[in-house]
Amino acid sequence: MRKLSVILLLCITASAFAQFQQKPLLGIPISSTHPLGTGSGGLKAAWFFLEGSGGQAFDLSGNGNTGSLIADTHFVPGKFGSALDFDGTGDVVRVAHSSILNVNHFTIVIWIKSDTSSVDLSAAEGFISKDDGGTQPFRIMNNATENAVRFRFEVVGKAGQNVDGSIALDADRWYQIVCTYDQVAARLYINTVLDNSLAETAVLDTNADDLCIGCLGNVANEFAGQIDHVIIYNRALSESERALLYREPFCMFEQDNIALMVETLAPTGGQVIMITSLPWILSIPLLYGIVYLIRTKYKEVA
Image (cartoon, rainbow, N blue to C red; front, top):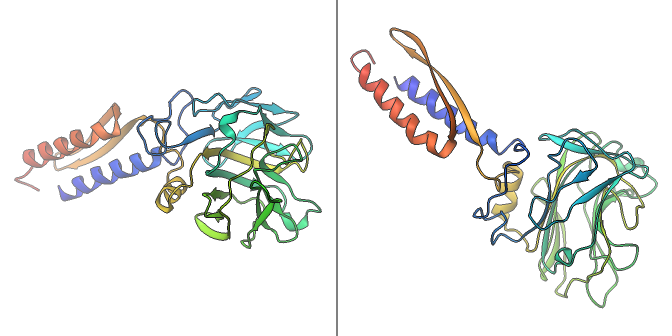
């Protein structure tokens, strides 16, 4: 019966973990109590591209930053579920300006997969930016000459500054890019690894320009590849929070119901226990109870 207990606990752990490794169903809300959710976590925009079809990308933060899919931007299977595909020629997601996107401290999380290695490009391709060619609070792009990521930001009274990474990006491979600014430094992370940083203490500049996913400025330097999701916070996330978003990208969503099926190898023959329509947090004590009952029933042969 120890074997049974181990099987049950492994099923619980695997099911709970897998829940946050895959995109939730459309309609499941982001939690208002999770530290990275819509409450006090500082979430300002979240495009998870759960729609799967249509011409809009909804902002699940509740702040109304709906994006419009331009040209042939369309939904495809991505890293964790539905993603957006960009062909590098006019395909972008445009989000109308909102003052809520003018943040002083921030974290931007974006998962990308390039169609072509950036070392082969003659010009940088934009992953996300908020500018129209003038003031540039933030731009995240590839750096063609270095085959890596460039994080460009602009503070009041200074020209734009670049944080150039050195971690090479391979084509057809997914990367989590995280950029932060906290009036101490601007930092660039690739798959949780600090790629580069630049000390800066000034206030971030702002503008009234639209935000563009898949381009720089006013639909220029368009990206060729796929973007799985984009999240913006109005604070620099901690190391543990960044790591959590890499391991469990959808941990901030309300916990979905899960179904567990456990085959119990009892002495009298196999039996199947099915648990459905229960949040996994409630399934845990229930499964412990089942383990206890089965062990009690068969203790004489366990």
